Image (tube, rainbow, N blue to C red; front, side, top):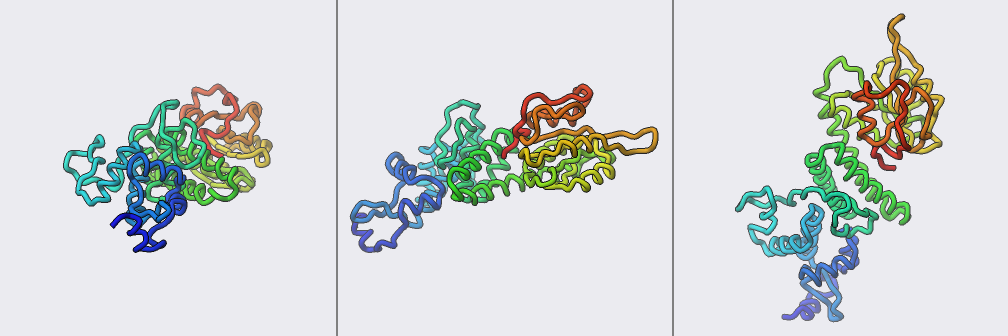
Length: 362
């Protein structure tokens, strides 16, 4: 029985259209047609008008294709693996990936390949997101986020941290993908708001897990670094990244979160006696320089031995030069150096250059 007869036998409900499947997978219809034409990974059924109708088996095969390409496998190899797995073979070409012994059982998705250097050729993301020359991990992460594949998003984030370290994974993988999703949302109305929410939640979950894990081994009695968003400022993700990196490097961090009232911030400084205070401002409307100066001038301790905290102003809301006695870090690594190795900073030093985010997204 030819495919036209099959389509007639099963009726119009035999499968989903290319457009519907593309929306489900988070890729463009053109990508699905290209995969069909180039790699033979197409639908089993077509209508009399030769329109593609994708059966549940086809959908499963395409989901496997998306998972493999998101993990960094070239489309041609991913197509071969997806088709062989769809045919029920016990072994697949994915077993030829580095790190898997011959004859071993294939995992649900292969390991992520090493990141491409900046500027190196990379396959198109297939998501419509403005990723530019981002690392391959960004493209895989974007694909998983657009198709709302929460498990794949979390696996890719965890793998990126394990492969590159937290600071590099944040700067080179998480931030570019978050920025691309944010720009796409701004230019597309509310079409991608669910993608940004999913990705942000999983990035935050990853950072918090790493923070909690590292905090368990922190040395007791070491003054913490106080992290706080200024009054009216809800964006906490950049501070979560900084807190996780600091704690990982032996500098315990105390996170107060978003929109901390001025009175609560001053009270916390006096109670805790932090070694440093990082104040985050995402926009000029929340940058409160008088409050920052008040924090910098707040002293504690016994009479004759009173001291104060170094204050770092982070985020795009602050002016480039906030004045003496306040530090203005650049990227994430600069903020960490100012906190972990303060002896390298001259008294009253101000970090050079305008920071849009200690490697941080909007």
